[in-house]
Image 1 (tube, helix red, strand yellow):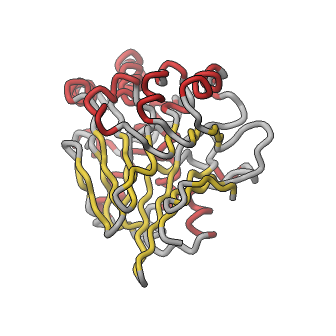
Image 2 (cartoon, rainbow, N blue to C red):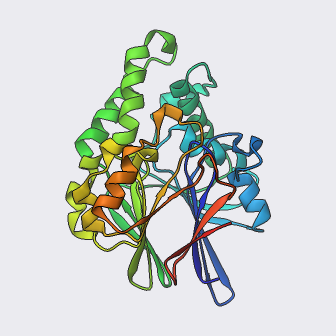
Length: 304
């Protein structure tokens, strides 16, 4: 193994692990961690299970694209149980929210916020460095490069303002504000391009909107494997976008329940019309695999 990118079947959620070996050295990059308790279904592979089964002794870098529960729940399960070199985020919570220590799972949004509070506070207690990414930045590890792509800064500032205006003493009365924050998390998520030996291998799209890619048009060309944005949301994929990237494979991170009516069935026709890419689902009705593995050397997809 030189470099593999593993898309975990965590049900409705996303967790991607990039492992790179050079000589006797190993490097492990994790982008998001899936939902909490993803291991309850035997067909699935939680981040916790993956770490145990693959005998991973350290996560060198953990990237959190945004703090929806289906992207960070699995991180809450592993933090403190495996060494983490650093965590990269682009949105730090205000201190008054962190100090609230809130633990409220009564709504999906409050559950997401509670998990993020706990993760950031645990990182502080464990002295895990937290790097706040403020602009598109490429990071290098020998022949492996991962570039974090930033959202529109005006939208990100709007999200920060909404968070700063929360009153932690009466959140139940701020449903409208929390709903706005919930919607803004997707449009202000980070994305990432994984490159190996100078070639763009995988585009990790998280839940970003189609407008996210406007500043990155020149970089979105001939990427071998593309993760479909927002679990296969047809509104976040266009024929022009697909044609520009010209992928060999499109991977949809989804469950077999059609959660939030995703993925949309229309994406299959769109992908076949505008590309020659083969479509893969981390989970669908008939799937038995727990991992979709991309070999960076061969740009091939394997079922594990």
